[in-house]
Amino acid sequence: MSMLEYNEIKEHKIIVWDGMPHEVLSSHVFRKQQRKPVNATKLKNLITGRVAEISFGSSEKAEEADITTRPVKFLYKNKGEIWFCDVKDPSNRFTLKEEIVGDRMRFVKTNSEIETIIYTNDDDEEQVIGVKIPIKVELEVTDAPPAIKGASVTGGNKVATLETGATINVPLFINIGEKIRINSETGEYVERVN
Image 1 (cartoon, rainbow, N blue to C red):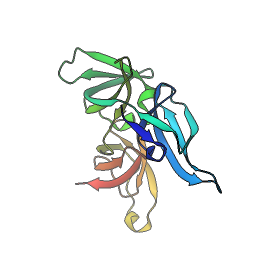
Image 2 (cartoon, helix red, strand yellow; image 1 turned 180 degrees about the vertical axis):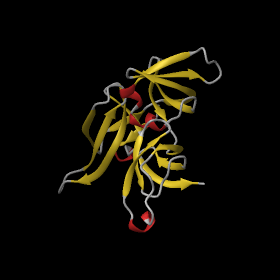
Image 3 (cartoon, rainbow, N blue to C red; image 1 turned 90 degrees about the vertical axis):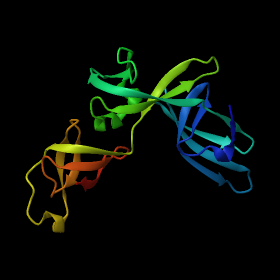
Image 4 (cartoon, rainbow, N blue to C red; image 1 turned 180 degrees about the horizontal axis):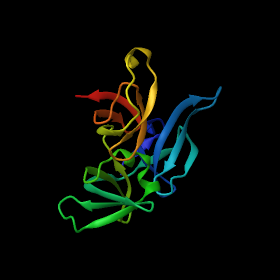
């Protein structure tokens, strides 16, 4: 395990804090008057989902978490659980709670291949703590109000339903049956795909 200095604890790093993996949501290194520098961070516990504000002094270090990824196939959602299977062995199925996976799964089509994020603790026990979804995804619009002539000039948005069932704001000129690109992190429309 590598140890990170206080100023190396930055956004998107995954560290071990209190024996559990935490993702660094934000970090800000600053110095209060004549004191030593401090890194004020927001850490999200990847097992419980809780967010805590932790400050690391200049003499403190944090252990970088042992993280690996493994490809899986998304099968379906049912009652707050999301089902996956091994890519090579479809009979090897497992489930994750929706809280662990997060809101970004609404942009993943059934039978799509994604990666699970696996944390290995000091006892070599593996635990799935999340999924890795492409930042840009292409989906078809299945329902949207009719396009308005001249809408590309005036701007504005309307709500469209995608093939996964997710709803997002799209420009007024988008029609049913068109493919659009979406940023899965922000849930925002990026562009129309030809």
